[in-house]
Amino acid sequence: MQPFEKKQFTKKIDGKETSLYTIKSEALTATITNYGGIIVQLLFKGKDLILGYDTIQKYIDSSEKYFGAIVGPVCNRICPAETKIDGKMVVFKKAEYLLHSDALLSTKVWDTKLVSEHKIILTTSLNGELGFPGNVKYTVTYSVKDGIFRTDITAFTDRKTILNCTSHPFFNFGTGQVLQHQLKINAQQYLRVSENCVSVEPEDVKNTPFDFKKMKQIGQNIHEENEQLKRGIGYDHCFVVTPDCEQAVLQFEDVKMIIKSNQKGMQLYSGNWLSGFKGKYGRAYDERTAVCLETQGWPNACNEEKFPSIEVGAMQEYQNWTEYQFL
Image (cartoon, rainbow, N blue to C red; front, side, top):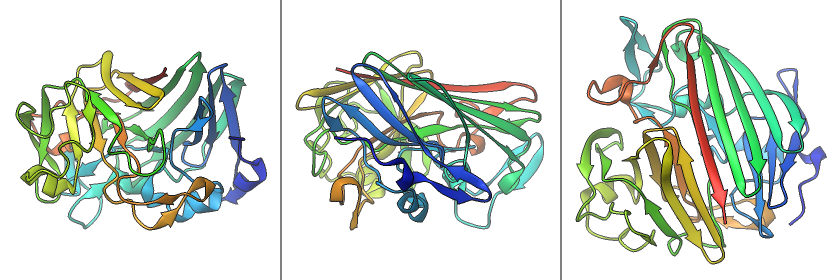
Protein backbone atom coordinates (compact mmCIF):
# COMPACT_ATOMS: atom_id res chain seq x y z
CA MET A 1 0.00 0.00 0.00
CA GLN A 2 1.25 3.46 -0.92
CA PRO A 3 1.27 6.52 1.39
CA PHE A 4 -1.53 9.03 0.86
CA GLU A 5 -1.01 12.26 -1.05
CA LYS A 6 -0.09 15.20 1.15
CA LYS A 7 -2.45 17.53 -0.72
CA GLN A 8 -5.42 15.47 0.51
CA PHE A 9 -4.47 16.44 4.07
CA THR A 10 -3.76 20.14 3.59
CA LYS A 11 -6.35 22.53 5.00
CA LYS A 12 -6.42 25.72 7.06
CA ILE A 13 -8.37 25.52 10.30
CA ASP A 14 -8.54 28.64 12.49
CA GLY A 15 -5.52 30.01 10.66
CA LYS A 16 -3.36 26.90 11.17
CA GLU A 17 -2.50 24.50 8.37
CA THR A 18 -2.89 20.76 8.56
CA SER A 19 -0.46 18.44 6.86
CA LEU A 20 0.75 14.85 6.64
CA TYR A 21 4.00 13.42 7.99
CA THR A 22 5.66 10.03 7.64
CA ILE A 23 8.09 8.25 9.95
CA LYS A 24 9.51 4.83 9.25
CA SER A 25 11.88 2.02 10.11
CA GLU A 26 12.78 -0.98 7.99
CA ALA A 27 9.73 -2.82 9.30
CA LEU A 28 7.15 -0.09 9.96
CA THR A 29 5.79 3.04 8.31
CA ALA A 30 3.53 5.41 10.25
CA THR A 31 1.74 8.37 8.71
CA ILE A 32 0.49 11.13 11.00
CA THR A 33 -1.57 14.27 10.52
CA ASN A 34 -1.26 17.19 12.91
CA TYR A 35 -5.06 17.45 12.98
CA GLY A 36 -5.87 15.72 16.26
CA GLY A 37 -2.47 14.02 16.23
CA ILE A 38 -4.20 11.32 14.20
CA ILE A 39 -2.40 8.16 13.08
CA VAL A 40 -3.61 7.90 9.48
CA GLN A 41 -1.69 4.81 8.34
CA LEU A 42 0.31 2.11 10.08
CA LEU A 43 1.94 -0.11 7.48
CA PHE A 44 3.48 -3.48 8.36
CA LYS A 45 4.09 -6.49 6.11
CA GLY A 46 2.33 -4.69 3.29
CA LYS A 47 -0.85 -4.16 5.33
CA ASP A 48 -2.45 -1.05 6.77
CA LEU A 49 -3.33 -2.14 10.29
CA ILE A 50 -5.69 0.67 11.33
CA LEU A 51 -9.01 2.13 10.23
CA GLY A 52 -9.32 5.71 9.02
CA TYR A 53 -9.83 7.98 6.04
CA ASP A 54 -7.94 9.13 2.97
CA THR A 55 -8.67 12.88 3.28
CA ILE A 56 -8.51 15.42 6.10
CA GLN A 57 -12.08 16.53 5.46
CA LYS A 58 -13.43 13.08 6.25
CA TYR A 59 -11.65 13.12 9.60
CA ILE A 60 -13.12 16.55 10.34
CA ASP A 61 -16.62 15.43 9.40
CA SER A 62 -16.33 12.30 11.59
CA SER A 63 -14.41 13.68 14.55
CA GLU A 64 -16.77 11.91 16.97
CA LYS A 65 -15.34 8.56 15.79
CA TYR A 66 -11.84 9.40 17.13
CA PHE A 67 -10.10 7.24 14.51
CA GLY A 68 -6.40 7.21 15.47
CA ALA A 69 -6.70 10.45 17.45
CA ILE A 70 -5.15 11.74 20.65
CA VAL A 71 -7.90 11.97 23.26
CA GLY A 72 -7.87 14.30 26.26
CA PRO A 73 -7.58 16.01 28.67
CA VAL A 74 -9.62 13.07 30.00
CA CYS A 75 -10.57 10.11 27.86
CA ASN A 76 -13.55 7.82 28.27
CA ARG A 77 -16.65 8.83 30.24
CA ILE A 78 -16.98 11.28 33.12
CA CYS A 79 -20.37 10.74 34.76
CA PRO A 80 -21.98 12.96 35.83
CA ALA A 81 -20.36 15.52 33.52
CA GLU A 82 -18.87 17.33 36.49
CA THR A 83 -16.35 16.77 39.25
CA LYS A 84 -14.63 18.49 42.15
CA ILE A 85 -11.06 19.65 41.45
CA ASP A 86 -8.95 21.37 44.10
CA GLY A 87 -12.04 21.85 46.24
CA LYS A 88 -14.14 23.49 43.52
CA MET A 89 -17.00 21.93 41.56
CA VAL A 90 -16.41 22.00 37.80
CA VAL A 91 -19.39 21.43 35.50
CA PHE A 92 -18.13 20.43 32.05
CA LYS A 93 -21.51 20.37 30.34
CA LYS A 94 -25.19 19.87 31.08
CA ALA A 95 -25.42 16.25 30.01
CA GLU A 96 -25.58 12.74 31.40
CA TYR A 97 -21.85 12.31 30.87
CA LEU A 98 -18.83 13.76 29.10
CA LEU A 99 -17.21 11.45 26.53
CA HIS A 100 -13.56 11.87 25.47
CA SER A 101 -13.60 15.52 26.63
CA ASP A 102 -15.81 16.45 23.66
CA ALA A 103 -12.82 15.95 21.31
CA LEU A 104 -10.86 18.92 22.70
CA LEU A 105 -7.45 17.47 21.75
CA SER A 106 -8.78 15.31 18.92
CA THR A 107 -9.77 18.34 16.84
CA LYS A 108 -6.81 20.63 17.57
CA VAL A 109 -4.27 21.48 14.87
CA TRP A 110 -1.01 20.67 16.61
CA ASP A 111 2.35 22.36 16.06
CA THR A 112 4.69 19.82 14.52
CA LYS A 113 8.41 19.12 14.37
CA LEU A 114 9.71 16.24 12.26
CA VAL A 115 12.82 15.36 14.26
CA SER A 116 14.07 12.60 11.97
CA GLU A 117 12.74 9.94 9.66
CA HIS A 118 12.03 7.91 12.82
CA LYS A 119 10.44 10.53 15.13
CA ILE A 120 7.88 13.34 15.12
CA ILE A 121 6.88 15.69 17.95
CA LEU A 122 3.51 17.45 18.18
CA THR A 123 2.63 20.18 20.70
CA THR A 124 -0.48 22.12 21.66
CA SER A 125 -2.08 23.68 24.72
CA LEU A 126 -5.45 24.12 26.40
CA ASN A 127 -6.31 26.88 28.85
CA GLY A 128 -9.55 26.33 30.71
CA GLU A 129 -11.62 24.91 27.85
CA LEU A 130 -14.78 23.14 29.06
CA GLY A 131 -13.77 24.17 32.56
CA PHE A 132 -10.72 21.91 32.87
CA PRO A 133 -8.43 23.91 35.19
CA GLY A 134 -5.01 25.15 34.21
CA ASN A 135 -2.93 26.21 31.29
CA VAL A 136 -1.81 22.77 30.13
CA LYS A 137 0.88 22.20 27.52
CA TYR A 138 0.68 18.86 25.70
CA THR A 139 3.44 17.05 23.83
CA VAL A 140 2.97 13.89 21.77
CA THR A 141 5.98 12.04 20.40
CA TYR A 142 5.52 9.31 17.82
CA SER A 143 8.56 7.17 17.05
CA VAL A 144 9.42 3.95 15.25
CA LYS A 145 12.35 1.62 15.82
CA ASP A 146 12.58 -1.78 14.16
CA GLY A 147 9.11 -3.30 14.67
CA ILE A 148 8.08 -0.99 17.53
CA PHE A 149 5.71 1.95 17.19
CA ARG A 150 5.76 4.12 20.31
CA THR A 151 3.45 6.87 21.55
CA ASP A 152 4.54 9.25 24.32
CA ILE A 153 1.95 11.69 25.65
CA THR A 154 3.12 14.24 28.22
CA ALA A 155 1.37 17.24 29.72
CA PHE A 156 2.53 20.01 32.05
CA THR A 157 0.03 22.07 34.04
CA ASP A 158 0.32 25.30 36.04
CA ARG A 159 -2.69 24.40 38.24
CA LYS A 160 -4.04 21.27 39.85
CA THR A 161 -6.17 19.51 37.24
CA ILE A 162 -7.19 16.07 36.01
CA LEU A 163 -5.45 14.30 33.13
CA ASN A 164 -6.06 10.90 31.57
CA CYS A 165 -5.11 10.96 27.90
CA THR A 166 -4.97 8.13 25.39
CA SER A 167 -4.25 7.30 21.78
CA HIS A 168 -7.22 5.81 19.94
CA PRO A 169 -6.18 3.63 16.96
CA PHE A 170 -8.79 1.21 15.60
CA PHE A 171 -6.98 -2.03 14.71
CA ASN A 172 -7.88 -4.56 12.04
CA PHE A 173 -5.15 -6.88 10.76
CA GLY A 174 -7.34 -8.25 7.97
CA THR A 175 -10.61 -7.19 6.37
CA GLY A 176 -14.17 -7.51 7.61
CA GLN A 177 -14.97 -8.14 11.26
CA VAL A 178 -12.29 -8.67 13.92
CA LEU A 179 -14.12 -11.43 15.79
CA GLN A 180 -11.55 -14.01 14.64
CA HIS A 181 -8.60 -11.93 15.85
CA GLN A 182 -6.89 -13.65 18.77
CA LEU A 183 -6.58 -11.51 21.90
CA LYS A 184 -4.82 -11.87 25.23
CA ILE A 185 -5.10 -9.31 28.04
CA ASN A 186 -2.96 -9.81 31.14
CA ALA A 187 -5.66 -8.80 33.61
CA GLN A 188 -7.22 -10.54 36.59
CA GLN A 189 -9.98 -7.93 36.79
CA TYR A 190 -12.02 -5.63 34.60
CA LEU A 191 -14.27 -2.71 35.52
CA ARG A 192 -18.00 -3.35 35.48
CA VAL A 193 -20.09 -0.61 33.89
CA SER A 194 -23.43 0.96 34.75
CA GLU A 195 -26.42 1.02 32.41
CA ASN A 196 -24.94 4.06 30.64
CA CYS A 197 -21.58 2.31 30.24
CA VAL A 198 -19.70 4.19 32.98
CA SER A 199 -17.06 2.26 34.94
CA VAL A 200 -18.22 1.59 38.50
CA GLU A 201 -16.30 -1.27 40.18
CA PRO A 202 -13.70 -4.00 39.60
CA GLU A 203 -14.75 -7.62 39.12
CA ASP A 204 -12.68 -10.77 38.64
CA VAL A 205 -12.59 -11.97 35.04
CA LYS A 206 -12.61 -15.63 36.08
CA ASN A 207 -15.61 -17.54 34.71
CA THR A 208 -16.82 -14.52 32.72
CA PRO A 209 -16.65 -13.58 29.01
CA PHE A 210 -14.02 -11.03 30.08
CA ASP A 211 -11.35 -13.64 30.79
CA PHE A 212 -8.65 -13.00 28.18
CA LYS A 213 -5.74 -14.27 30.29
CA LYS A 214 -5.14 -16.86 27.56
CA MET A 215 -5.33 -16.16 23.84
CA LYS A 216 -8.83 -16.55 22.44
CA GLN A 217 -10.87 -15.14 19.60
CA ILE A 218 -12.54 -11.81 20.35
CA GLY A 219 -15.81 -13.31 19.18
CA GLN A 220 -15.58 -16.49 21.27
CA ASN A 221 -17.83 -15.21 24.08
CA ILE A 222 -19.13 -11.91 22.74
CA HIS A 223 -22.64 -13.24 22.05
CA GLU A 224 -23.11 -14.88 25.45
CA GLU A 225 -26.03 -13.93 27.67
CA ASN A 226 -24.29 -11.50 29.99
CA GLU A 227 -25.51 -8.26 31.56
CA GLN A 228 -22.18 -6.49 31.06
CA LEU A 229 -21.97 -7.45 27.38
CA LYS A 230 -25.53 -6.18 26.93
CA ARG A 231 -24.63 -2.85 28.49
CA GLY A 232 -21.60 -2.41 26.24
CA ILE A 233 -23.33 -3.98 23.21
CA GLY A 234 -20.19 -6.09 23.20
CA TYR A 235 -16.88 -5.25 24.84
CA ASP A 236 -16.54 -1.62 25.92
CA HIS A 237 -14.82 -2.11 29.25
CA CYS A 238 -11.60 -1.16 30.99
CA PHE A 239 -9.28 -3.95 32.14
CA VAL A 240 -7.07 -3.60 35.22
CA VAL A 241 -3.51 -4.08 33.96
CA THR A 242 -0.05 -3.83 35.50
CA PRO A 243 2.07 -0.87 34.35
CA ASP A 244 5.46 -1.22 32.66
CA CYS A 245 5.01 -4.75 31.35
CA GLU A 246 3.33 -6.73 28.58
CA GLN A 247 -0.36 -5.92 28.86
CA ALA A 248 -2.00 -7.32 25.73
CA VAL A 249 -1.36 -9.39 22.61
CA LEU A 250 -3.43 -9.18 19.43
CA GLN A 251 -2.88 -11.59 16.54
CA PHE A 252 -4.47 -12.39 13.20
CA GLU A 253 -2.90 -14.42 10.39
CA ASP A 254 0.75 -13.31 10.05
CA VAL A 255 0.55 -10.15 12.18
CA LYS A 256 1.12 -10.14 15.93
CA MET A 257 1.07 -7.06 18.16
CA ILE A 258 2.31 -6.82 21.76
CA ILE A 259 1.29 -3.79 23.83
CA LYS A 260 3.25 -2.41 26.78
CA SER A 261 2.52 0.83 28.64
CA ASN A 262 2.89 2.63 31.96
CA GLN A 263 -0.88 2.85 32.46
CA LYS A 264 -3.12 1.00 34.95
CA GLY A 265 -6.05 0.51 32.60
CA MET A 266 -6.73 -0.73 29.08
CA GLN A 267 -10.08 -0.08 27.44
CA LEU A 268 -11.20 -2.92 25.17
CA TYR A 269 -13.70 -1.71 22.58
CA SER A 270 -14.96 -4.18 20.00
CA GLY A 271 -16.20 -1.65 17.44
CA ASN A 272 -19.81 -2.04 18.50
CA TRP A 273 -20.97 1.32 17.15
CA LEU A 274 -19.24 1.20 13.78
CA SER A 275 -21.91 1.22 11.11
CA GLY A 276 -22.66 2.27 7.58
CA PHE A 277 -19.79 4.40 6.33
CA LYS A 278 -16.74 4.02 4.11
CA GLY A 279 -13.14 4.46 5.09
CA LYS A 280 -9.77 4.11 3.40
CA TYR A 281 -9.50 2.06 0.22
CA GLY A 282 -13.29 2.14 -0.16
CA ARG A 283 -13.76 -0.34 2.66
CA ALA A 284 -17.07 -0.48 4.51
CA TYR A 285 -16.74 0.09 8.24
CA ASP A 286 -19.53 -1.82 9.92
CA GLU A 287 -20.15 -3.32 13.33
CA ARG A 288 -17.06 -4.93 14.86
CA THR A 289 -14.71 -4.23 11.97
CA ALA A 290 -12.11 -2.95 14.45
CA VAL A 291 -10.84 -3.44 17.97
CA CYS A 292 -9.41 -0.71 20.19
CA LEU A 293 -6.99 -1.30 23.06
CA GLU A 294 -6.69 2.10 24.71
CA THR A 295 -4.06 2.49 27.44
CA GLN A 296 -5.26 4.88 30.13
CA GLY A 297 -6.04 5.42 33.79
CA TRP A 298 -9.26 4.04 35.19
CA PRO A 299 -12.28 5.77 33.62
CA ASN A 300 -14.32 8.22 35.71
CA ALA A 301 -11.64 8.14 38.40
CA CYS A 302 -12.38 11.79 39.17
CA ASN A 303 -15.81 10.74 40.49
CA GLU A 304 -14.87 7.40 42.05
CA GLU A 305 -12.91 7.80 45.28
CA LYS A 306 -11.76 4.17 45.30
CA PHE A 307 -10.24 4.42 41.79
CA PRO A 308 -6.57 5.43 41.34
CA SER A 309 -6.44 9.21 41.15
CA ILE A 310 -5.95 11.06 37.85
CA GLU A 311 -5.24 14.39 39.57
CA VAL A 312 -2.03 16.14 38.55
CA GLY A 313 -0.66 18.91 40.76
CA ALA A 314 0.50 22.36 39.76
CA MET A 315 3.89 22.37 38.01
CA GLN A 316 3.79 18.58 37.68
CA GLU A 317 4.08 16.48 34.55
CA TYR A 318 1.68 13.81 33.33
CA GLN A 319 3.04 10.90 31.26
CA ASN A 320 1.49 8.12 29.21
CA TRP A 321 3.76 5.97 27.08
CA THR A 322 2.68 3.00 25.00
CA GLU A 323 4.71 0.63 22.82
CA TYR A 324 3.16 -1.45 20.07
CA GLN A 325 5.56 -4.17 18.97
CA PHE A 326 4.76 -5.87 15.67
CA LEU A 327 6.02 -9.33 14.78
